Amino acid sequence: MEITKELSPGQQEELIRTLKARFEKNMNLHQDIEWANVYSRLEADGEKLWSLNEMEKTGGEPDVVGYDEKTNEYIFLDCSAESPKGRRSLCYDREALDSRKEHKPENSAIELAAFMGIELLTEEQYRELQKLENFDTKTSSWVKTPAEIRKLGGALFCDRRYNQVFLYHNGADSYYAARGFRGSLKV
Image (cartoon, rainbow, N blue to C red; front, side, top):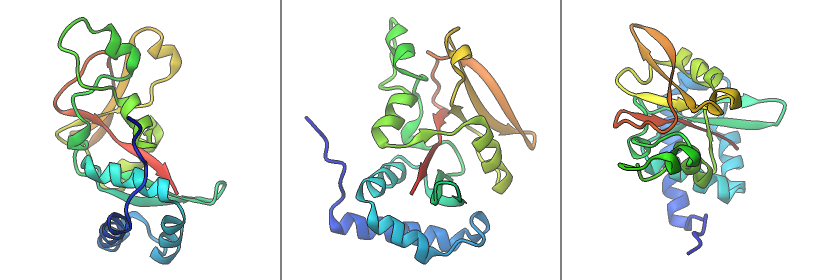
């Protein structure tokens, strides 16, 4: 069954109201960005709205954190205090999921992100997000893993402890109730 990646007009309205309220509440995340400009982009791209709605539904609390001058796009990241609840207990990717003989999680971070139309944060994006506020003080989040690490069976994740941001490694097939992933979407 193919899923329509489209929101009804009512769903769009509700999501935009939520995003606007969050934008206005967290001006420290996006100084020098005006809501009117973000809003016009959102109105023009139904598929990106659907992706933002998926981020919202899974507990990510997406918000604008920047503007990419090269691509002329606004950058939305998951800004929930902890790794999004609806995206935890996932191994890293399909290969890791398939390698598990028992106790398989429902999905993988890479596959779920692709379905949602978003990207996992890179380590650099994760560290930039942590400069805005303290995130993942009780949870952790998978980050994009370089191919040379993944080829050897590993995957990377980050968190914040002791007022520091840490990068760790784990087997890509591991999964934990307190580890999810944060996403990025350009609009």
